[in-house]
Image 1 (cartoon, helix red, strand yellow):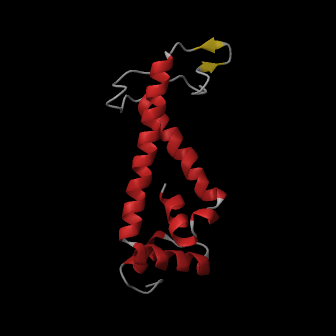
Image 2: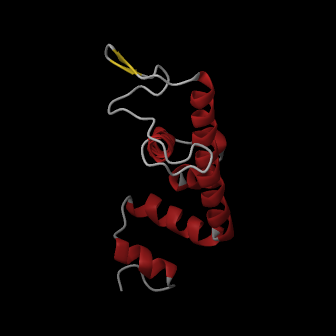
Length: 131
């Protein structure tokens, strides 16, 4: 979610790119797996509710149907949304607290298009880009 939040802070919510919006897809896939496959939800508890290649909203895979009550499906949806919102808020909090460093990185990425991990460390440590 940090890529999306960073674009919102730097360019504004109306100018978020499709690259940043892929953060939502990846975060959703991870949150669904956390809740349905890995039992990492205090609300759902450790119970497996997933099927490989399952469409979460139809709860089926090909002709094979997964039996899930509407109540459980609603709980899963709420948990997934909660996890995504929690991640979004966490990223926003960190990037807002370090907005000067965010702007510096954004400026350097616009100028150079890519930065290595070492270059990012150098910038955030107030050293020359390629020192």
